[in-house]
Length: 73
Image 1 (cartoon, rainbow, N blue to C red):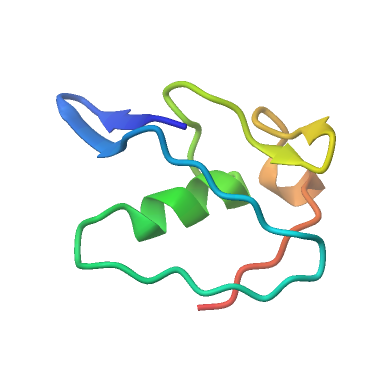
Image 2 (image 1 turned 30 degrees about the horizontal axis):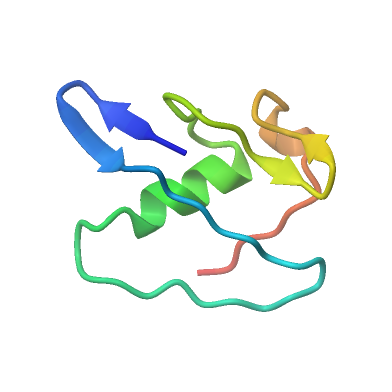
């Protein structure tokens, strides 16, 4: 997945696989794209390119309230 804000590429070919019910932690330095990735997964941001799947279902354009996901910070 790629996410750009103007000339800034916040995510550059990001890819992650999380199994249903799996607890995961996303670690990285400040400004590396952690929040942007989570916001895309949750549907709060739309990727510039690429798709987001929950299992076999493409949820890239699905509204946040219709996604079955939870994000705790």
